Length: 420
Ligand code: PMP
Image (tube, rainbow, N blue to C red):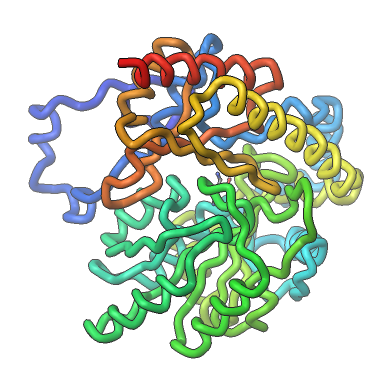
């Protein structure tokens, strides 16, 4: 597998000799840097013959090309000078108004001054690490956690302590035990990273009582929570639950949101909502990171909210993804051996499957790629080598037939392993 940031572009790993040339120059933190399993995978899965159930790609073909062209040309005609210029670090006021609307749709009331625009939700994770972490600091996360956060935690040399989940998300009893142990060791975690809705990769959702408990613990112990919520509005069934941010009332929760899953991932526009002193630090970090998120893309968001009914598009996406989830779950039932278990998420984009212990999904992936199908092996979601027989399966990026065919192929290679 190659280290590669560009979808579809393969790079050859540098030879030991080439690396040696710069050996004494790289910062210590680069030693712990790992390539994201999903990023690696993008180069492979961009090949047209591969059915990718690996990366969490929203289906961009659902966005009409004519709408895209119309909106971009309006930006060009109406706002070209500003769209082609640098913008404020915390984002355009008009985009922050759109964010206020989106958060209100989940029942979270914020003002434009409570939020800052970022380059995707991913940047919020990076900026929070940048603002809070010194090497060796403790971050508490779920087990498994978002594979894309793992390289970020590693690059800030965090000591990540992962808390087991059950079907209701992070186990609060284990969290309290862990926090108490850390307290006795004199180690105060800098933040608790959680994805309460349709967790990536676990597919589980934290119910209201657990959310309240988590916020209570953060308040009692004066700990920050980073609530990552890219999927909250992609709910296919059940009642929406309040965000941790709204339950907390602006004290200890930093909220990360994104337009990636409800509009377009290519825009790279997300946001953070946080108490003012934290927002100020994130802003300083962003000034250093990229000055501002693309004004051109921010104008596109504004134009989209002006010209189109974003809730209707979201409804359409929900319908498509709900059906794809059902197709995937039915295919798993049909093709996977009976010892396999998986989550049936109420929303989001991922199913998390557990195979029999003796199956290693990293090895399985090599065989799967030969059959032109890809998934994310479970180890990518842990920092300590666990997850060897687990896998993440995405159902949003390919159509019904490919989902079924992809699962059939995975089922075939798993059955071959089981039979060995
Ligand atoms: N957090 C989680 C849990 C995600 O699944 C993703 C995207 N896969 C992100 C953050 C980053 O999304 P973006 O930067 O596109 O907003």
